[in-house]
Image (cartoon, rainbow, N blue to C red; front, side, top):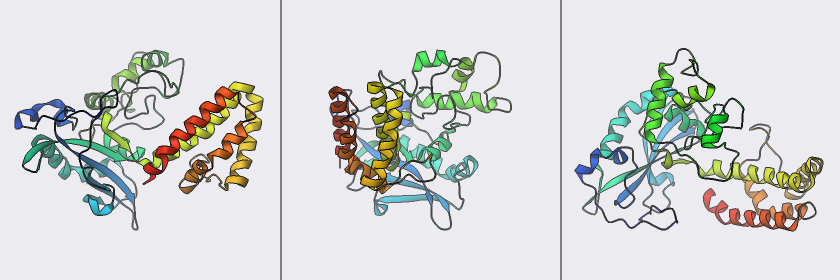
Length: 333
């Protein structure tokens, strides 16, 4: 199969250029992000946790085939018998894999007699990805692995908020991270005293700009634009966001008191009519099949909103729900 790279208008870019050894010195090639018009092979490298006994596995896949996530179509590259994916454990696992990764990016792959460049995607859950990248985690100022937006509006980080926006902002383009920022931020963070570069002189914004919430060197070359969180986590996150969005719409139309009353009615509807209950972990969210059941019965939530929202807001919410339903089941497969 021939997967495409799309331009800013979502049109597939025509691939006309072959990969040569002369291109191997290109920084984009060495980070697995070659020019979009170059013939390529889409390769994934991801971490999978679990099993009995527990282990961490590094799995390699090729997207240029039907059902690329099928276990029969993936390659088990490394196994470590540990319960958690700690940085030091992954470092020891990847010491043998990293040179092969570099050789693959520099040399490309032969497909039907043509040498093609490798477009590398890193996949897994957030915790595994941040460990591979040396990122500090979700509680830092810049928790996103792909962009530089800040976690939430604050007075001490107002300079960063004005420059990069916050994750709560929904309008405007994001300032994406680059592969060099992970490496440069890690050098600053790793050389910091005690708290990995969060101390020192200057304002909080200036100190944050020095390391960008990265404290350790990345274990693999990565281009942030090609980080792919596993689809299951996307569906969980979007499902929860839709429930919060319904409450926010009610507050916008009728005020906070009406929003509080609506949350109680929404909880009763989900339990009695949809038949789901939140789990006692992950902050009391919905997981697994419950997310899809809520999506399948989103018409019940829209009916509940009918008496709470103006026609404009109700139509917008319902339309957004319908658009999400078009891709939700595909993502889960």
